[in-house]
Image (cartoon, rainbow, N blue to C red; front, side, top):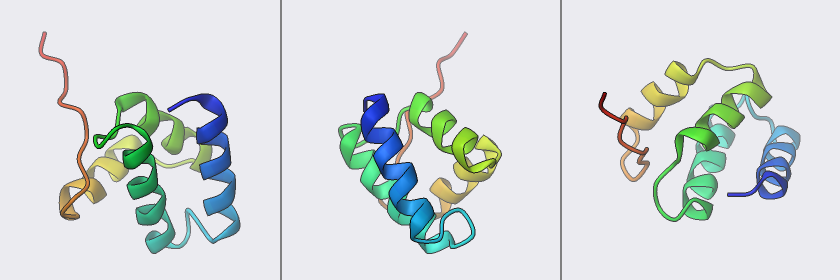
Amino acid sequence: MDERQMRELVDYYRDQGAPGDQQMVLALLREAQEADGGVLSHATLEAIAREYGLKQTALLALIRRIPGLRCEAAPHT
């Protein structure tokens, strides 16, 4: 997802109540996942966390609880 798309999504969902409204955060994650080709990228999660002042670990915990949300596998070193 490019920066412009991310900005539009973040701004739209902020106007809808995110990050305070968890349902709006979930809607944002679903839409971002679709824009990322079916799997949320680490860059997308970092951008969402940064824009909303959330911890990335909190987003990851939410993603693990919701069927249908998927995140890139962590690179192994």
